[in-house]
Length: 130
Image: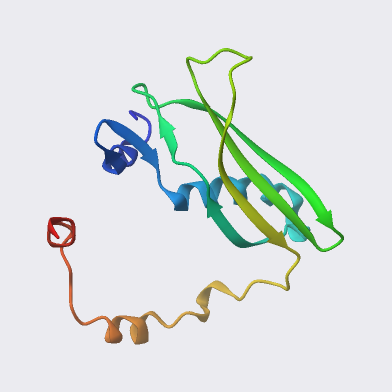
């Protein structure tokens, strides 16, 4: 948690849980090594919370499996750092990966138009007070 203090913001009771967006990033990092042939993440199902221990660490595995010529799956597993080699791993997420076309250019999003639709500013304190 010292290296990534933002994770402490995802504490539920006494447990620090890795947010789903970070799990998606783990999958993306695993497939990005394929370069231009990297598949696109077309679906992510969170199976169990990815929980960090008090030191903010755990063991992770991202397993990629080819399903067909144009699709594959990714499975994200975790194990607490204090566990032994024979202890079970927890399935935290599964993802569907597909071969897609090229990604749109980064500048294709019109931020001005997006901001004009979002006229009400919410403060985090207001949202979490609900």
